[in-house]
Length: 95
Length: 480
Image (cartoon, rainbow over all chains, first blue to last red; front, top):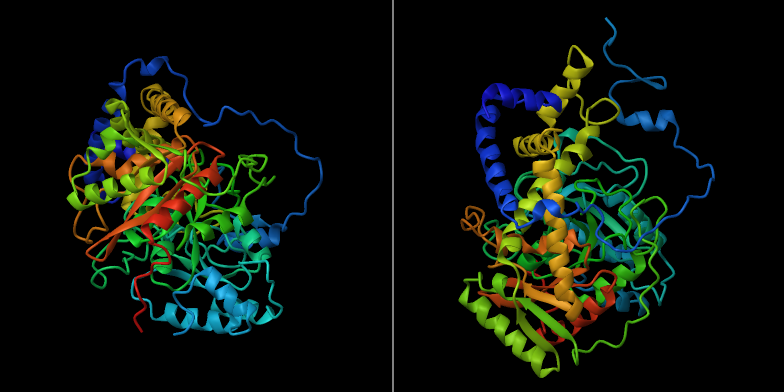
């Protein structure tokens, strides 16, 4: 992976990188590819179904339709550095 | 110091007999924590702990948790208490509610005293990558050895004797590996047994909440008090309490040792002590077999874990933008604010993992990486289930050696023996580490992994092993 590709990948998930990080990532990526090769080697791997849930049990239910109190915007926005009244303020998006 | 190093049971007896109050104990715990040299602390809550302790005046004889001080890993939310996941991106973040496990412990009148360090967002196995730096092991020469991770501060705090138990989380082995290095019992129950509401998601399909204690019976008490369905956690399991729990015995129990993993262990004392333990289990009536296991699947454990963890972490941490909450950086546009916040807030290590996760999840790569890792997970789980069809537990040394020094990295090509315990996360199995011998004063643990929802059987077998080894209520000694 070249530096251009590394920057593009970081930009996709909105992360800035330092020049040192850009340089180091190539080695991390190479290790990742090396690990992935070990999975490729497993016999009949691609015939299996992916596993996202470990148990054979199935659990289906509907939640009771009961209203629950929210802490409220004022409380929730205490953790935002961008809050004004009951809004989060960001730079203008539509230009 | 009169109360430090005591177990929950011993403190409880003092409370019941009127020889100590929760406030006496909490004051002493706080005094010890302020002198801690192992870098275990994130946010402390000393005033709140004293206040709660003071309010506890009527001892509850049947409640072992009444007035017991404890520590909480800092990726578990507590209302009004700064919770960062040991990451700069969440400096100053104050949750609006408690994790369910905290609510249950508070309802039992246990007293939280401090939040503890971890590898940033749980992504690490050595306790070195949190924003406060390295957390040290209280065993060995001062500040020379790692305690393991990611639940490093919780493990070090209990092993130091400050408190009888701590809450941790376990995605690959983050409770059970530090438990081995710190001479503790580390238990992660079946996936879905303890609610994960309020646990910062790292890898939601594998994340578990669990505990560090200094004895198996106290791990059981905590499991019983905190398990159960929680409607706030969509993955919480409506499991009927096990009716099959019987009196603990080893007679007739079947124990499998995965021979190809054990064959990778090189520490001669560890091998000898493990064989000694196997002999004693057999003498007590257990059947212990060394069983084969596919070597390609063993080699796939760490890659499967790594790829899935990067991918899921990328999604789990996408909400960390600095906009709605978090440690925001400035920027000229919305995108620039988010990129700068994430660029400065995450360590390099986390950035790499999220980028690798993004790569694995891209449309053109997904089949080759993320989906294939999920398929490998299935193969591994099926193979483990097959062993457990005929055995109560799989037993192995929890780590190939005692806690390494800070400057010593894992041996090259030792991914299997260092990471195999992730099998219990892949399958959601109950899994417990307990100490089984000391090597020059440094503890090593043995790990038991059982069938899903067979938690009490695992606990019962562990209890009998603890009786054999006599290694319980260990701590590294308190230095004033």
